[in-house]
Figure (tube, one colour):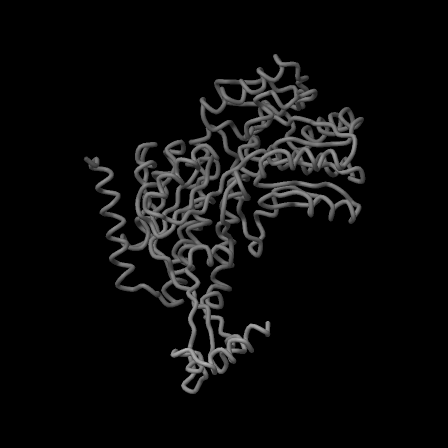
Length: 471
């Protein structure tokens, strides 16, 4: 027998679905108004949002929340407002020449009610980003917030209730049981961002209703430092990508493949980069805490297990591990091997293994031998080597000579491949993810379709022979 909360979720979905059926194809002014309301919410309550996320993490720099959550959320809204009306327009073409003068069109149509499951690491952006695309595509939405960010989740639910009509957007809070019931609802589309392990459960739950899913998972995103890389630049950008949000980023660099013999140079440059980016780290308010005690213990365990198995730990700062504050200073791990848990699981924190290679082919083979990552980073100046890596590796997205920033490009879809996810969104790609692109064939009044009607006689066989002889 379903629980009261499950029944409540089902009733909420039905309420939104009924509203969508009354207005299945909202025009652009309606969609734009919903987006503007969301933008106003973010701007009006900016400080409350920053404070709530800071409180959930224990320490989350306001600057990181503004740069990595508020800015891309508002930027996504403004991009959709600039381009969404064009995205809505049907794309019309002449039919294939055999069927002229018929015409075809591709007509974007809202999927209906979209479900969005939000993780804890970027609780604002990973709620607002897909919501923007869903609203631009004309859908209504239910958004399940993470139980690991209770203050922000409660705040966002309250703010959304004051921003949207109850039959437009509903923000749901609750524990893992609520999330499980949420994933099992018969949405018209479900987007989940989180771990690969949980992604399996979400996909199984969605399968009961054949709900189409977009899974934004993770995995071990590698960095390849090529033989022609500018090493000082590479180290700084790798450390930036690794240490914002204390490495709790789904596309954070997970490990570094670098030419054998460069480990010590990398270490020296890494220490200098950390001192430059995060001076006096033990007291620096701009370095984030690990979000939960459980995750802190997991990361400490990954480090300690690797060291016990023969890895060499290299501290990049004088700051000490502090469980009470959940402060985990950045550390390199040298002399690692694939049997270590730290080389098997996504790290999701400020530990960075170094894996030396003897040739670029060896580095490419290493990446290819492991599950496809959500992101791949390449530092190299030689165009031939860059093209070689791009053509011989699979990843959800790639940044060349930088980290993270491919996720911020509205014209690039964001998504995984294989075990790092399926489907993508952001910008027009997100609009299309949350739309059914309905194909339409429009027959002309005067046409030759009747030439292929039965009964099938000599004229039909002659016509078919002519058709088979052509492309």
